[in-house]
Image 1: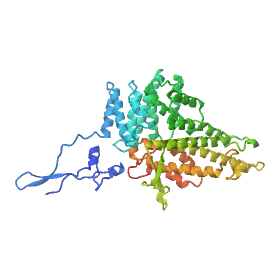
Image 2: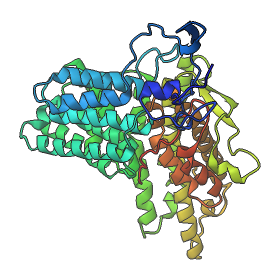
Image 3: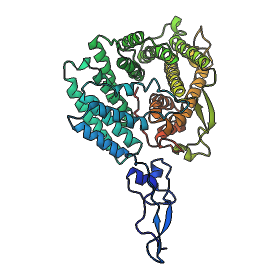
Length: 499
């Protein structure tokens, strides 16, 4: 029996139509793509090709047809995109099929239904109206998902060019005087704003799209949500406008009013809706704290113990909402398990910064908890920063004596027993919970939607860890994109919310 000739690619590279590096026992390309390499072994049989001349040949079965690779899917989508007579519904349905494999969480007993944060996508793909902006946006979204998950040959730079092309198509379509009346335009903006979370380093374009949504709603005089398609966009629009207000720390009364109108029309009464209602009050509190920090006016004596009241009231509202949510669940929403991932920032130390990770009931539970912790941490950060600013002003003005700014254990308010020490301890706990949530959210089974759910939280974490004495924690957050572990999405770098 002789040796084989040309080396054979591993099963996965052959299936994905990629060049294999033939490393054994598993190939490097599969390892870099976070795929469990199936190896090179093939079933063989002996056949007699002549008297006394047996040779070894592969055993051929009648396998089921090989599913198309992601590169093939993208090529098919592009062909449809460039063919003016092709079916729009076919392109959108095929886009959804691809996105279900990469972007949306995989179905399992704990994730039996689509999350509120993702129900908009299947409905968007069902829109029937002509819109090249929507078609190009969906294609760009698919290209980006294949690129960032390394499931094809396309690079992130190529995906970025596809995204910019779709932006130009949207701009052309927006020149139409009737564009604001089309649901497809809102859908295209929603898709592009999601693209930006994965490929844009800053939130400039994302903020512009949030402003565009608000302007479209103003032109329309609101949205009536008379159809299921319009109602499906409600949650996504509301989240976009909320994160815009939170990241810019501005109350934006127009956007807040629009979201109240959206809620009244949809009439949702669930725990996430309640959390969002409270969250919409947070930007005004943050804005008020920022104004106090830039004001040169002296705080009157009778107001010195009242300046933290709005923030402390907001903390109480958020905590009360969380207590009601836990009562609804009737079991712990999360628990701790040993961490199985490696963060490069830990290499310089003897032990992991976070040796335990949080396991959640479901990705839906994780969505609620991560959003709650991030908003609450941002409020605590605001209290800490305002206290630090006022304490510095007190030191520079010997004539004034503000004891609550000198003593971290002095109550911050006459009506609430909360000290700076307590606020700092609570903020540290919230930051730890958010970091320990990363491992669960970045699981491949949760799709790239899982990492997306932490985008705002990561921005809040980095802002908090920029304080002195948190250098290791900040380095850990910066290296989230470089973390590795079994079943972990590696290399996904999310947009950074500024503010």
